[in-house]
Length: 121
Picture 1 (cartoon, helix red, strand yellow):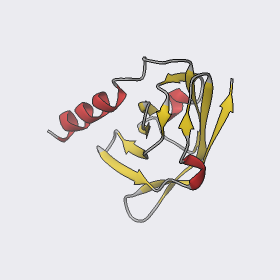
Picture 2 (picture 1 turned 45 degrees about the vertical axis):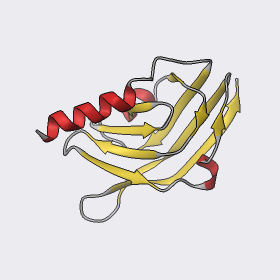
Picture 3 (picture 1 turned 180 degrees about the vertical axis):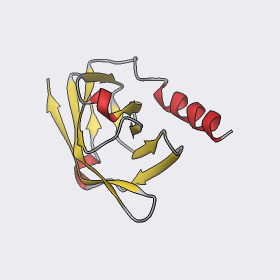
């Protein structure tokens, strides 16, 4: 049941990944396993390892959340947004999310040194 609920949430958050107006996402997050996903508003959830090798289309808008999701244990880990991630992404801009996945406590994860930047393309 947890697996089905996790898949539904991931699919719902990822539903708009292919709709784009020229805005893009580049992931530069190190230290992730193949079962970890980065979830970003205006984007959805993307496997971090697969997302690092390409630039992904996103919808324009304000970044209102970023969190990690673990496909192995079906848990989601909210991430406090630093000021660099409180941005609007407009058409023909690329949102670059960088940092490093690390353990935070017993079973929690977080992105250390989370940074966002918006680059005109």
